[in-house]
Amino acid sequence: MSLPTIKLGLVGGISHTAMPLLNALIRQQRLQLMEVYDSRLAAAKENAQHLHATYSQSLDGLLRRCQGVVFGEVNWMGNVPILRSTVLQRPSLVLQSVYSRYRLTELLELQSAAREHRCLVMPELSYRWARSTLRLRELTARGDRIPGISMPRRGGDRI
Image (tube, rainbow, N blue to C red; front, side, top):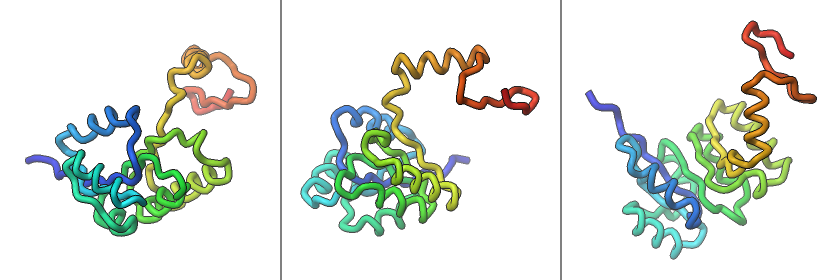
């Protein structure tokens, strides 16, 4: 018995740096990119043709028809498309760097909506291999105490 295919939608443009990730997603047997939406119709048609998908003239229509959403460069739309997908409980992968793209209030709004609607929003993690991030991982893996960071211990106590 095979598992069902998950229908994905793409919102916004895709940068050259994010294209390999999107292509890797599309090659997964259980994932099928169905529709592409961009606020610029010509860009939506071009991306849809390149990715062998159909273009959507409506963001809300795409969000209702797909089971998961990949967000590219949504630029002027801000966090609104991601909020809409969260309200509809569509898991989302955000290919832009959310930390440089959105203000703190927008990030907190996204976090609150994801919690309230119990929806997965996976941000792009461009700083995961930065020296400071690797050092933090090293310290937490060793169990060192880091000022200002509360870490659970195995017994459930916090250090």
